[in-house]
Length: 420
Image (tube, rainbow, N blue to C red):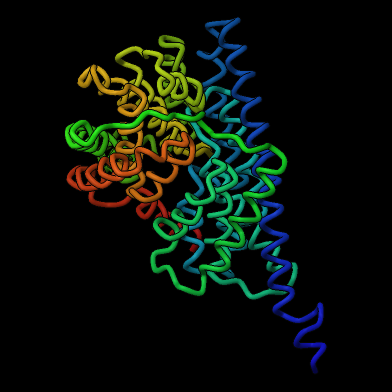
């Protein structure tokens, strides 16, 4: 009796092994995913640099092919991945064979890389959340541990932590976005998964800062003026993105209804938009990480960069191909921050850019605490915590006037319907 309760076959030990083993695997997979995604992004940029016209063919056809593969083999792998995990928490046992199945995770891994390989404006962070939740769920199933919603929440949080190298953001994301009703008993599970996945990522990739260290700060008077302006502009823009993305799936107009009935053709059209803008600007391909990093560091971007990246990210997001919007949204936010530098020329430029980033990102995902922690941890800008929080809260408030429904929550309802 004592052996069954406390021995290696006991439920408590199986649960601990599932958590530890799942978190380690999440960290490793996240690192491999990041490396392959960066290489795919680099390969496309080389192609576009050598043959300027090649994306006009490769991107639309690539979008169409990826959309067809997604519909044919893993329809629940389309889009970000975060709405699928949110939907999976409603039915933990059943979702392991649908929303967070092995097939969905593998498809998300391969096809997101494919999206970057053909120039899509996608990020890997959202897909990492779905892949991580699938890993954590499968590990619990193998070890015969009952699946609860907290398992997927912990997996998703570990995925965010490993993708951005931001442990605190992983915890905040679990509380603020994935868990509609965060329960106290989830705390240890989430903390353990985030800690282990983060340690694996740090141990292999090293202690890096995603966007590089930014040490600038704002004075009180500067923050009182700049933070509300950034919050309003960024929040409205982010809310507009969410509203347009949600409307693309429900708009009753005849052209949109026809395009939704022909998803492969719709994806090709979206790919053509991405290709034309990418060839015209040379800056809107892929995650947008390099451009955002340069803007934070003080480089100037064209005045139209934020708007152009907004359109390419929206076109990619509604096309139906797998891929996230985290990194592209941060890039759009950097473009908005670059515009704000012109409004506040005497202010520390890097700090102003971060205010634009956090406000826009909050407007899209409507998770101000997560946005502030992600920006703070990815830039080591802890001296800006209060101005960032002010911009995020104002951005969240402003976004509500444009789009009342939260983006991921709205999308998760659609996946619940699709998964039955």
